[in-house]
Structure formats: structure tokens, C-alpha cells
Length: 565
Image (cartoon, rainbow, N blue to C red; front, side, top):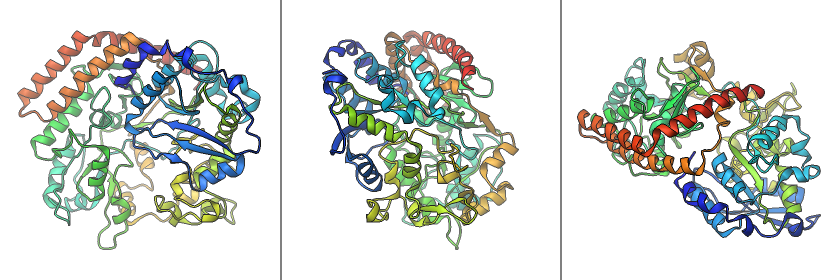
């Protein structure tokens, strides 16, 4: 993703190399068995916790290495936060960087430690065959031509058969009461949502129910929660560039503002929703948390993320008086975007800053973080407490209360206490993909263990699977040819240079402004007029240069990816 703040700091990063403090050798100190404290910043989209890491995951780190982590806040302002550190010429000890654009900024400022110079101190990275392609790619293609490993990717490994991020969800009970009408296209959700809101116009608490509710908090270059509908049709509108639409079906890319773009279709979809009174009027101004709260209270009929439903599912899916929740109901013309095999990892990275005051401790931490055994522990909890092997030598969760109520502080104090999610939550994404097969022959994460997949489904899931005629959503999608297999090439397109980035940011301001206006346009003629104004202004600002650059680099990425797939 691109951030407007990138352009503001690009012009100064070349001046920051001299501000990066002492060399790694000068700053290095021995952690040994003494207690060490490291500061860490993990860039995240949503708001993050801050302060000293606590709970069972933190205790594991302290017991192993006598290291404490002090998390700096980031959240939706992570780009602005990073710029402050760049301007000051000082970074936290450990950096969790989101996207190659941000990573490139920090590398351009000469503020990261070359990890390959400490290869003997990082055996869990350099001696693990599972990471070999990711290390090679990062050194060859994301090191500014130096050949060093400055940024170590995460989420390396296979994509799970059952894992889909962008899935259309409908409020199940209202959909049943509407007669479970057939949905053939994206636009059919408008008629269905209209029927569903007529059946349930308000919640039990008297709150108005909407067909659709959006938020603007994650807008960067486009209206993100509008453009993201493209993933339901196998079209990337972010990884390659948020100003491009890249089809995983045809492997072609084109401008987001092309007359026949999916983005225009998505804008029209929400325009029509507003015309029918189905769109939450707060969509243009509210934040993510506002929308999640509305999902939790049952105020929204349609979701575009497989995980966006707040607490509505957990509170309703086993209701004996009528199973409810947000259920997967995909239109028949959809081909859902499937994440690629990630042998080079995703565009999220961990690194060590040059100004780190305890290089030894930082190296120990990074080596610990990429240890497969540590990742298994942080993902699944301690063996014998949250999970164990059964009589068939298969791993299984033995205390589902801890896992199902992952937000509640139910973990035993003897292992550090806290909530189940505290193992991974602070760190975001770990080195290996959750579906990576470990030495015992089972996936890294409990989510894909046979015992989990075969676990008694909720009442709602039983009803949904009966409708689909399959045991899982993935089986249904593959059976009906509704999957668009992606490619790692989406992670191989290089960041635009400073001049083009300025153009992209300027165009983004225009696109965001007009997109929301179009959704709330009074009539069709106004919608089309604003589309023309938006595209005309984008053309004047240089959209053709952007399209030319990403078309060329996408074709190169398709050739390059053959070495890694």
C-alpha cells in the first residue's frame, strides 16, 4: 500500500544516513544471561497495543532469552509515525515494516543493519531451507542493489486450501427468512439486501439496520473498502498498485480508472445501494471500529471480508431458537482471490535498526522469532495446556475455551497469563505461513489440523454447508470453479521512484475525494459527470505514466516469478 506521507519524507531520506548514530560494532553489547530490553515498532493497519509485552508469549521470550519488548504505538498512523523516526534519524531497535515502499525508505536512509553480516548469529534464518528463497529474493531484489539482507520477510510458505480473505458474507437468519434467493452477480446483493432489511429493519435494541456499511480509515490512494470488492472477481487492486487492477485470471493489468474497470463497477454498486437507502450514511466518515461495532450489534447485512463480523457470529451461531451469524454466500459469477504460494514471503518484514543499543540482544530476538518451534508455541499455545497429541498421534486443541474466547485473559498464570491471542497479536505475522507442514507432518497452526477441520461445526455452519452441498467453503468454491489462483508476482513489482510516487499521491487525493462523492451522488447523471471529472484530472496529473510503469514492471515480475514458483 502507498501512503501520502511517503512522498513527504522521500526528499529527506538521503540526508539521514549521517544521522543514523554509531555503527553496529560500536553500539554492540553482550546480552548473555543478563536482562535486556528492546524497543520495537510493528506497522499495522489497525490500532495496536503499546507498552511492555506481557502474557504467556512474553514469558516465553523472557524465559528463553531474558529479553523484554517495549512496543511503540503505530496503528492507522503508522506511516506518519515512521516519518517522525526518519526525520529524527533514530529508529526503535526492532522494526516490523509494512510494504516494500516503507522498507525502501528506511534502507535509503541507511538505517538498517545488514543481517547477512551476522549470519552465524542467525542460524534459524540462514540455515532453514524453508526460508532460502525468501532470503535470496530479498538480497537480490529488495536490497537497493547491495546484495545485503536488510529486511527479512514473513508469512513464508504455502497458502492453505481453506484460507480465503475476501469472501461475501450475509446475515444468515435474515437471508433464510428471505427464502435464500439465488445470487448470480455482485449486483444481485442489492435486491437481496433490500429484502433482508425489509424483514429486519431494526435490531432488538431498536438500531437501524443497513444493507452495507463502509469506512474510510484505510483509504490510501483509492476508497479501499470499495476497491476491495475486486478480489471477489480475482482482481488485485492493491499489491501491484492501488491505482491498477491486475487480473489473476488473465494475468493482465490496467488502470483503476479505465472506463471498463471493476472499480467503476464497485462505485456504481455502492451508488445504487445508497439510492435504495441501503448504505449506511456514515460510511464516508466513520472508522473501522465503528463498522465492527455495527456488525457486532447486527446492524449490517453484507460483509466483504471473511473475518469482518465483530462478535455477531460468536453470540448467535449456536442459537437453538434460530442459528444466525455472518455466513459465506458467494455470487455464482465470482472467482475469489486465492493467495499464492509464498516462497519469498509477503511484503511484511522484520529488521534491526543500525542505532540499536544492544545488537546482541536484537540478533538473539530475531533468531528466536524465526525459530519454527517458537512459532508453533506462539501460534498454538503450550503443549499440554491448549493442545496435545491424541491417541492417533495427531495434534488437537484440548481446551477450546481458551481458543474460542481468545480475547479473554484465560491463560494460566503459571505460563504468564493473558489471553490466547497475546501469543501472536503484538507481532502480527510470523516467519512461516500458518499452513506450513512441520516435522510432525501437521500444519504450523491448529486452524488446519484435521481435528480442527473435523470439529463439530456450529449450527449456522451446518445449515450453510447443507445449502452449499459441501463440507467446507473451499470445497464448494473449487468444485464450482470459483477460485482465482494468484501468483507471487504480485509481490515482485518494485516501488515507484520518488517522482512517480508524488504523481501517485496527487492522483490518489483526487480519486479518494471523487469516489465518495460518486457513491453519494444524487442521480446517475451526476455520478457519470464526476467520474469524467475524476479521470480527466487524473490524466492531467499523469495517470498514463503510472499505468505505463506498472504495466511494464508487472510483465517483468511475471518473468521473474518463474524462478520462484
